[in-house]
Length: 316
Image 1 (cartoon, rainbow, N blue to C red):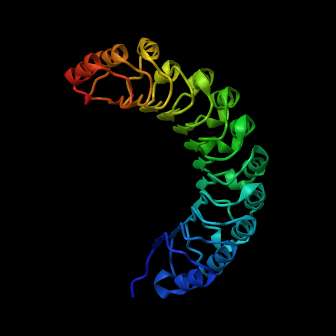
Image 2: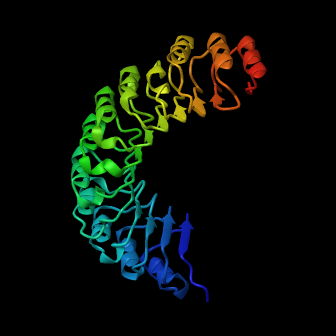
């Protein structure tokens, strides 16, 4: 029987016995990539997992389950996970107590990708994680949909060990202009190429504070209540700017175009905004459809603006 190197189960309830049986199957002996998502895994199932998985596991994805503090402790103490590179715990019930166990781990020190999104973490819960060997080798850090606030963003910004992070997600965390300024000014985040800050109350001041974040290739500031993205649109390496669902109007478009969007820009998403005929026409006259994808759906653009977009080669 051929042995698998990856195993994925989605949407099927697995209790501890089922997890044990799955991993005891000889075909799954050398699994390197294990993904058990929406499986209703509890802490007992996590114990069964670490008791039966092989030492070659590199990627562990356990999103959308019921893993709490005890399960986090089990993962943290499992020496069999010492080769792990990816730990994805999106939408569980870790809370600060579970995060503290992960931070104390002596095994999870080789992680490159850590996802703790949607786990009710606060800045106090994040602090020990960032101050631990867990964070030392990270290249991707996903902290979205938690309760970090400005204090959490400042913790991230002030963590020197995050110098290798290239992808950072802090979406929907109540981060305002203060936290955005810390992220924009941080010397420790110089390697970040993709920054996800959507669904935070950054407002215009917060978005403008990111203008010093050189090296960004992707920036998502959708639903941040900003009226302008002019300051960040001209970041020299920026390839994708997502600013949907913001009150950006024709004046905001004028400011963006006056600032001069980066030549590297390949995607500009201004959908669900307040852009009318004047703004649409201005964008059609400047943005090259052969180089940059432009999204303007769900804007109050009339016949004149749509005609200008079609003549320029954009769908309207």
